[in-house]
Amino acid sequence: MRVQFTTKLLEKFFKHELAIDLGSVNTLIYDPSEGILLNEPSVVAIDKYDGEVIAVGHHALKLLGREPRGIEVHRPIHCGTIFNFEVTTKMLRTFLLKVMDGYRRGDFVVGIPGSATPVEQRSVRDAVRDAGGGRVDLIDEGLAAGLGAGLSFDDERAHLVVDIGGGTTNIAIVASGGIVSSISLPAAGNAMDEAIRDYIRSKYCVHIGECSAEQVKKQLGALHEENRFEGEASLEVVGKNLIDGSASAINVTSEEVREALEPILSEIVAGAQRMIEDAQPEAVADIYYAGIILTGGGSLLKGMKERLKEELELHVTVPENPMTTVVIGAGVLLGDHQQLYRCSVKQDLPVWEGSEELVVTW
Image (cartoon, rainbow, N blue to C red; front, side, top):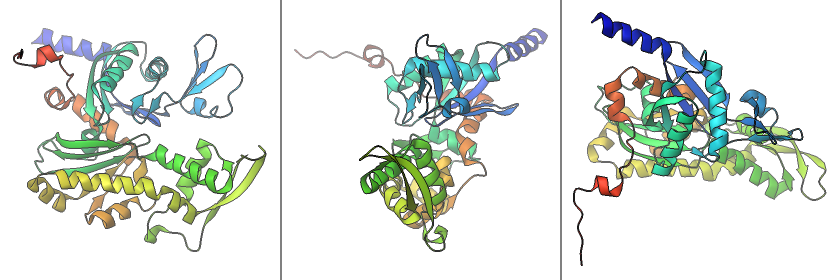
């Protein structure tokens, strides 16, 4: 007994157990015993010639759009999918070195979109292993968001979780600490920013940057009558004139922002409606009483809660800190290895291993 206790103590000292939310916009790392260790933008600046990491996170984000010669700034994750494997590994390794006292391998739980393909799942596993992971468990972000918002493993009722992140919106029905069904939509924070940029480009022939579009979204993105501004609010934005290439300042109104965001919001609402329509009657009855749990950075947009409540005619709750629910939910599973094994996304077996028999028709 004493040897077993000593072994567990040494494993805890020499091995990290961390939860990771590898998002398109932000990367979060969580230790259940210490809390949020890192919350940085998923951006990395790399030397073009030797491939060395110059900066990550907030420091790299400041270089985006104004990179010095010889430096490339990357957002290596698009729509919840690793777009550049090598750059993602370098970014994640640098993040882990920030939070781990010394380079030691660890056991990690990582949230992934519910509709991630086996190839996308494998790329996440390989990237985390190459960055320093020993055992890597993947968990559906919809389930992780629900657990991070306070759902219990013992709660057998079905809950609808809508997690509006930066790259994807994950919509899941969660019951008894497991996923009943889930989908991932590309309609999320990045798509909203791009919709604003497209609207301004087509209406004013002015091209604005990513940071400017995000600022417009945060300040003018009132999506419901109760949250609309008294009068018509506006914000001055400076961009590049597409006709002569000069700097142009325009005033964007809140009404224009609502018009630009409407297709994205409609897609999110339609996705939640489809999820309810495809659910079993008992699950639909549970959702009627339990309502919707709204999480992710998109839940902070003014009027998002009221929009879902009005369109779906369901009660909507937002946790105290909706941006950290995925990583905290993944951290909850770190302390319960039995539940982690049951909830983790299993690797797909090859066809010849997964089939019970091989039938040949001549």
